[in-house]
Image (cartoon, rainbow, N blue to C red; front, side):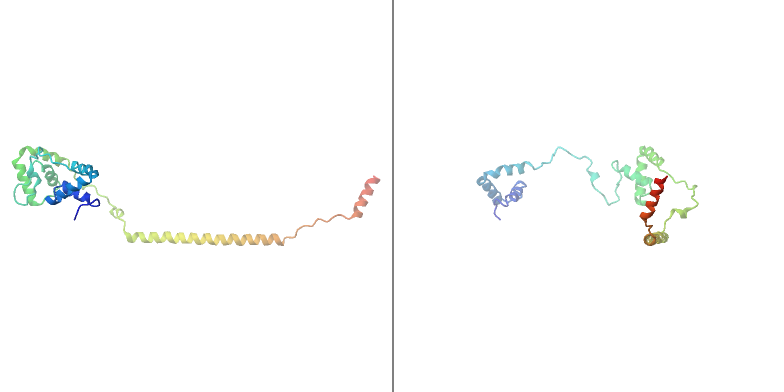
Length: 204
């Protein structure tokens, strides 16, 4: 594959990581000479490479290894982890024996062991809850309760529908009663009666 302006980034990365052969490296260098606008991009990639600081040395390298042999696995770096597991009784018998042998060889750690043991809480078995059955919830006991709520909801919906139809029927009856009620008619008084009343008033 020949370097071009479409794949030059891949070649630049391989060139920077020193993963190209001599011929390919020369090809990249000639490509950069021909395309000077890409020279700065190659320099940026080369400056992004991190170099290890060889002056930093980890002293306890044995802590980085995990041994599967019968050698001593407990040390100052993992003592607290083993101590907690030992106190919680979470070690197998083989590791428990190793931990006890390590304690026997390091008597100064006995105080720390006693301190961790004193922090462990023990259950008070004298306190007994008499109604333990109330603490449990069974799925088969919940189903009838759910069914009962659905039954009451359905009954309430039926009552609402029945009440709606009853109110509509009552309103229809009232309208019919009003329609059948006779309406009083105002009768205009006769002219003769009006004249007679007027004559009597004049005579008085």
